[in-house]
Every structure is written in C-alpha cells, then in structure tokens.
Length: 293
Image (cartoon, rainbow, N blue to C red; front, side):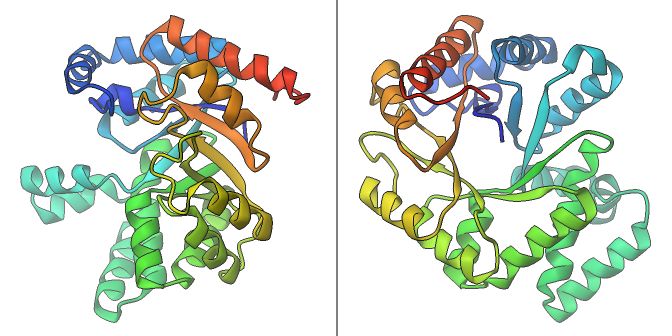
C-alpha cells in the first residue's frame, strides 16, 4: 500500500463540512476534465493511489488512463464496491435485464447470470459475492488494481449479520480472479478485526475513521489501539481532520504517530490543498523517522 492515498468524495458532491461547498464541487466536477486535472495534481504531488467508488464517472477516468498510460505512470486504482445508487438508477432507466447486460462482464455472461440465479434461489453467499465483484470490476479491465475494497455499507452489514464466511469468499475471489488483496472499509474496526481473523484473513487491509478527537471511531482511540495490538492490521486512516474539527497540521501530526496506521487517505479539490496535505505528511513522517513510500 502507498503511504498516501487520494479519495473521490469531492468529485461527487460529498463534503461533510459544508453543503454549499459540496454543491459547488458537484457542479465543477460535472466536467471530467476538471477531475482529471485534480487527479494529475495528486499524482505529481505523490498521492497516486486513488481510492474510488464505482460511480459511472470513474469508468470515464479509467478510459482516460487506458487511452494514455504514459500520462498516468504511478497512478493506481483502489476500487471500492458496491455503489448502490448506480444499480438503482440503471434499473429505473433500463429495466432489470438491460441493467444486467450493462454491468455483467461480457465473457461468461450466461455463466455469471446462472451463478446469480442460483445464488438467489439457494441463498448462496459465494455466488452472490462473486457476482457482485465481477459486475463492479468490469470498468477496471486491463488496469492494475492491487486492492479491492468492500464498502462499509456491506462490510458492516455482514458484521451485523455475523456471516463471517462472506469475508473469506470476497478475499479469495479478489485473489484468484484479480490477483488482488481484499480491503475492508468499516465504521467499526474493533468489531471487524476479530471477525476477519475468524475468517482466516490475517493482517488485513482495513480503512476506517482515525482522528485525534475520536470522531466516528467506534470504541474510541483506545479501542483501536487494543484491537490492532491483538489483531494486527494494515489500517488506512480516513477522516483524519474529523470533518473540519481538527486543524490539518495538528491532525496529521497525531495520526502519523498512531503505530497501526499504514496509510493516510484524504480528498481535496485544489492543487494547493493537495500539496499542503502531502507536505505535512512527509514532514511528520520524517520527524517520526519513517521513510517515505
């Protein structure tokens, strides 16, 4: 995993600090060229790992990368799935059958549909999980995706249901079909880590809120420290600014010194903010004696 990862919330009108700013960003980033400009700025600043949803716009970004690979050297997609709104919108617009045709991989279409049908009829976790992954990964064909993330809406639902085997199925399918590691986004890291251990997933990649004031950190800072000490994990820290509750310098100085944090995820819509964040991470990494990756 890269030390610094770049997120996509700002491109889709998601801003936890300001609804007005979110609307302005949504309008600005309707133009894909504006998204490309920001991603290029992130890449050149040293944040080439791109954690993204499977929004339709990301497919257009993937097309750009495939068309001009020399401009995107060092840029890596880390897709997170599922993106539920996409499916709902497609069914409304196209109907059920054409929506399936749109999302399922072209190769083995009949087999994939049969797997899905049998999964529904037999409540087969493996069939449903692999169908989901294959549908979402279609847009990333021929691109390097070393980690595939399960979005927290599904990760935490599985936690609540206690269906531990679903985590194993997801992990094995990512590895066997896509030569990728599984990643898990969660709102409850202390509960997730023992379940991943039970599923046979050791030293997992987990993305969760990590910040000095324990904003949206289930179990609090001590809960995270205790869980990761017992069940080691490669943690990606998101929401490090606590939705604006902590100043950037203070927030990054603290998160860099949390021993379980392997990577830091942030989003920004301007080159200046990207550079400032990356420079702060490098500054405090260096002060902590950590080598840049």
